[in-house]
Length: 173
Image 1 (tube, helix red, strand yellow):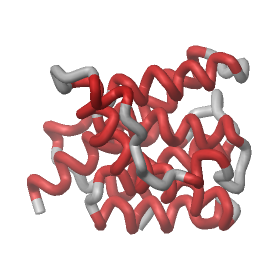
Image 2: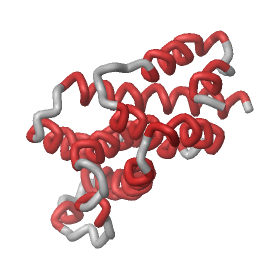
Image 3: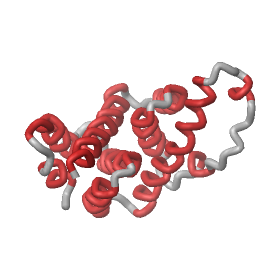
């Protein structure tokens, strides 16, 4: 089932979400690798298997195996990093921010695709997971690389819509 068909199964109260999925699939401000990588990363970040399956099917013909793995990897790493770094940021004890994380995250340095694409995937997932420290870090890297505010906003819109699709669909099934 395509993502549009998946979203089409949402009830009328989620009509805006359905329309937003269609808009994102037709989004022209991002190259296909970024757009479909974001859709795949954000689907994985929801943890909702029916949405992951639809995104995998939708994105498979549009992404190289390396880009698909980087998208999945961004979701996996941010699942870990967003919890850890959100804790160090929110904890009242600043000592945790000075301690080494001692978490393996080699994929960030060598994602197998363009670093900007991986950073966009990581930013969108970090926004979904609510880690302000990670959002700031990824956004700074993207701005230094010359990524526009519109591209950054679009990546987060993809995360927001994918999260909404998963939330509504999972509540009804």
